[in-house]
Structures are given as structure tokens and as C-alpha cells.
Length: 519
Image (cartoon, rainbow, N blue to C red; front, side):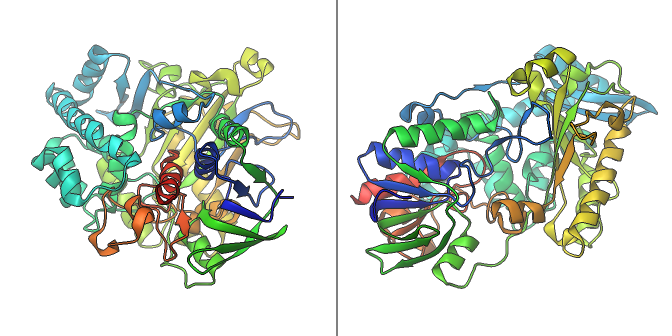
């Protein structure tokens, strides 16, 4: 039970952003209560023993870290760290009837050699270096603004200080830039994938939703690196819960919130433990869930577009491309069916209501970089994890029969992976204590049911460019920090806030800053 009947701040949802907000506010001396509907904190950033009788703690939903500012880790004194991957990516291909692939990593010389062997010249590697040199400079300028009040569009453009890059990434479809910069279809596809993580779009979508997704995937940490959380994603949320409690915040689990009432100055939060007063309510849930709690009309439906698969293997599978060690290939992002043309065909098939014939996906092995997620016996026997994230799998495809569609898509996705393996992946799968293969798949509808992600959308709604919308004028501190709702004392502190999405803690930080700014 909560210790009080009224708090300075009640936070709805104990995911990582809610915990960040709770820790900052409690450290500032505010009375804080976190209410979580599940029996544990963490939301989508958790580690779970997913397979019966198996000592493997998998990052079940979100699984890599890029956008988490080190300032948050330092400010909150978190005992949490990430580890760099030695290989960025490997993409298998067949050229001239023989298996080959593109390895990005292992040093500049090795990457240059891989580009030359695949494409037949130095051109694509030189273009790659120029392209990602540009995105790194963009990241250095944009990332620090994410934990500051929202800049205007003009101010962010001035900070970027490169009109060519601004025009290419903020004003034109990303496909234009990719096609102007690269000529090889596979290289183009590897670049485009960062624009399609959880985002259903074509390269030339005029809405620029692919550009916004790409931007968030290349600016993290000021470098664009995607790192492995040591101990699994749950290590982060456990550290955040510890920091929040240590600062004096209360956390109550198994406590679903059923309603929020506010007059703009004071609020009441109704939950399984009764009704609790609050000066401010911070909502670490989607805008759809917020509307339901307020009794308001929900926003237009969001839609997720991914298949998430967790696996445990007795060993990594051998590759048809024998020049690459599987331990290298799977330690980075292993791209499957993600050539530029393949991605466009898959998008068009899914947009027409069909499952992609060659489902695109990307895979990586957490345990190669961080074996601590496995028990000692599994490590000794050589077991490894695999995490697969499938693209172009919009929720609409699963509406008629979620279970059957999920199984069909899983089978097709693994079959596509098998075309690049020297042995079937099924031969490498471990089995749980009941003899079942250690593999689980989650569709967008599963993520909606389990986590409250609207339509399975991992960003809660479409991502926005990280600058202020002039139409949002006014609104005081919440609007300045990108966390405003239609009510002055109700703030969004989750992925649905401006500059939300990913495992970042940024919306939680910004909601807390807005509260503290207003006093």
C-alpha cells in the first residue's frame, strides 16, 4: 500500500522512463509514488528467464542501448554499464552464384577489404566513410539538445550548421540521399534498415517517418553506436528502481491505474489501492492509454511493424560464407533479406495485406559480448542467445488470426535465415526442461496485450523531429520540454513524449525537469 494519500508527483507506469523521472524528482526532495500494473518494474526493458528450467536471462523486448545519455547514469549514480560490439554488422549475400557478404567491423582495413570484395571497387567504402562521418557530426550536434528544452526548428538547424545535411535528412525522403550516395543494392539496404526499426515505411515515403526513425538511430550518444547492456536490459531498470527507492520514491507494483481526474491544479489517480491525490501526474504510458485514463477520445491508432524473436542455441550455426567466423557475424547485427530492393518488395507486399515472401530481419547474439546473462553451466557448454527483430510486419497483418500469422511469419523468417547457413537453425536450438525448443516470438498484437504498446508500436506513436512545433505554442514548462498534454499538471514521461522512443530515459528526465522548473 502507498504510505500516503497525497504526493507531489504520482507516476503512472514503472518502465525505465517512469523510474528515471521518479529518481530525479525524489532526489530533488519531492514526494513521489510510482504505480505499476505488473508485478515488476521495467516495462519493455526487462530481463527474463523465458524458457522453463533454463538459466538464461534474456532481454525479452528492448535489447540494445544507444540513446541513454551518460549524464543520466552519472546524475542518478546508476550501477550500470554497456559494452561495445567489435563488429557493427554482417550481411550475407550471394554474388556470382557463391556465398559472400559484407562485414563492417574488425578495423578499418578489414572493412575496406570486405567492401572491395563485395562491390569490386573502393567507391562504396569511401562513400560509406563520408556518409557516416556526416551522421556522426550530426549526432554530436543534435544529441546534446535532447536533454535540454526543445529548440525551435530554426535553432536546431543552426546547431546542425550544415544546410546540405539538414535538407537531405529533415526535408527530403531518405531514399533520395541513399540512392545518390551509394550504388550497391546491398550497401543501400544496410543503410536504410536504421530507418525501418519498428517503422513501416518505404524509402521514399513523403511523410518522412523513415527519416525521423533514421535520425534517432544514428544520433545516440553523439556517436550512433548501439551497445550491449551488461547483465541484460533488466540490469538498467533494476538500477533505476534502486536509485528511485534510494532517493525516497515509493514503488507499488500489482497496482493498475484505472483513472485520472484533474482540474489543472490538482489531480486524483484511481488505482487498485484506492484514490491518491497528486499535484502532478506523470504518465509513463502511451498517449492512447492516457486518453483512456482521462476518459477522453484517444489519438489516431498507432501501428507497430515488427516481429521480435528470442532464442537460445546450443551452438552458433555454421555459415555458407566460410570466410567469416559465426562468432564475428552474429556479434554485430546480422542482416537477412535487407537489400534495398528486398526491403522495398517486402514493404509493398505487407502494404497490400500479404506477409513478405522473404521477410527482412536483423539478428544479434548478446551472449557473445556479455556472457553474464547465461548460467555457468550454459557458458561451459557453449550455449548462445540469438535475438531477432523482423521488419515490415505491421499489426494489420495479424488482425484476423494473430497466432496463425505469427507462426507463419516466424517459419518464413527462419527459412530465409537458413538460406545463408550451412546447417538448419533448428538443429542448433536448445530445448527447455519440458523438451520444447527454446524459441519465442512476439507479434505487434502480443506487445500491445503484454505491454500496452498501442498496436505494438515500440515508440507509442510516430516519432517526431526533435524540435518544437510552432502550433503547440504556450503550455509553459511541459511544452518547453516536450512533455505536455492537454492538462497543465498531467505530463507524458514515456516514449510518446517529443524525443521519446528507444531505451533512453530522456522523456523521464525531461518530464522531471519540467516539474522542477515550475516549482
